[in-house]
Length: 233
Image 1 (cartoon, rainbow, N blue to C red):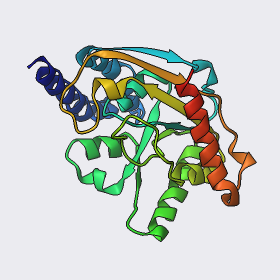
Image 2: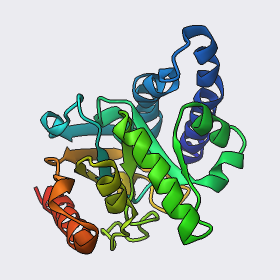
Image 3: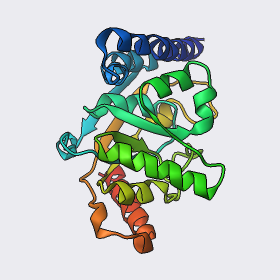
């Protein structure tokens, strides 16, 4: 019963802020305002409702003056909130274009300047990445989950190459991030929330200029290895 209440309140709190925050753009004339809300107001209540304590290590590896792509493992709906709390920067998330039509969520993502990718075919996907790269070069910090979906076991899966192609196109570093504990609190396809501890470790930036499209697999593999090292710390 308590778990069901936690789940209801988490969903309600998330949708409430997604609905309300964009209206403040009309008052502040600042499109970044919903993102500021996402890393300040949202996570403080979010962690209380989920019953989690979060420790963050490696904030010194975040260079606020330089945009980057933050690549993280993904095994829970809680990962987004944990990253918003742990990374002291405005974060943009990348989602498939179909999300734009989802009530409240899609509207929020569009207004807040999150990035949509058209995956209907390779040509449109490449064009979407090209446009995303321009936005990143102009200063957007982006979070991507290269596994492509939430892990069903809690273990780190194989990486897709989209995040690494985007890093090359935008000429920005990849910052590896490992999230530990969210799978135990709220795993995939589970409606039960079990309060617990979460640890977020931020690794050193990986220079994308060392790689090319011919060595993109090496780029992905070395980033995955960096995340595994963070996991084992």
